[in-house]
Image 1 (cartoon, rainbow, N blue to C red):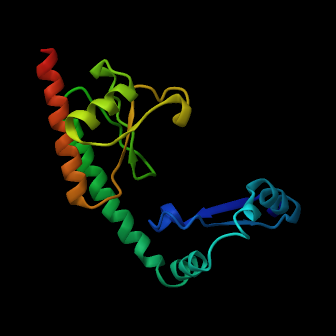
Image 2: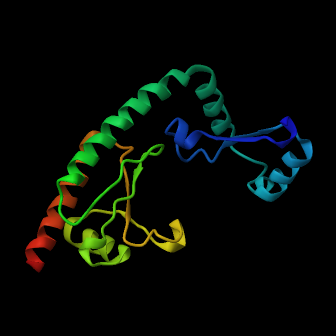
Length: 175
């Protein structure tokens, strides 16, 4: 059984340190491991990841693992706040995510495509969201936007204030 198991671990999400471009791949199967390395083009990045990234990864594993529990609690607080706010807004609905720091609310009641809605928010509320397009999120993504709640509470609140204002303005415009 051990020969069939491949574990992949990323530090960007687990420790909230995006940008290291580093992770761990572990398997007992040397052939599978080599295929993963060959297909990852890891050697095309000047021999792999930076020394600083390696030190950061080691520090996370050896000295900072306790932090993830606190980080998850923080994210849950932000998630619950965002869901409560969105539930009170017009033209938008959101399910509670189970294992991510992203919301993917449905904006189809706005009668705009995801890209049109994102452009509207950028122009009218100075708010940047990611459109739910098939290209990036697959079938069924249209009519949704991606909201990241892995940020400071102040930034999250400001973003949700702007989203609410923009949605209320849409309701006023279309009666």
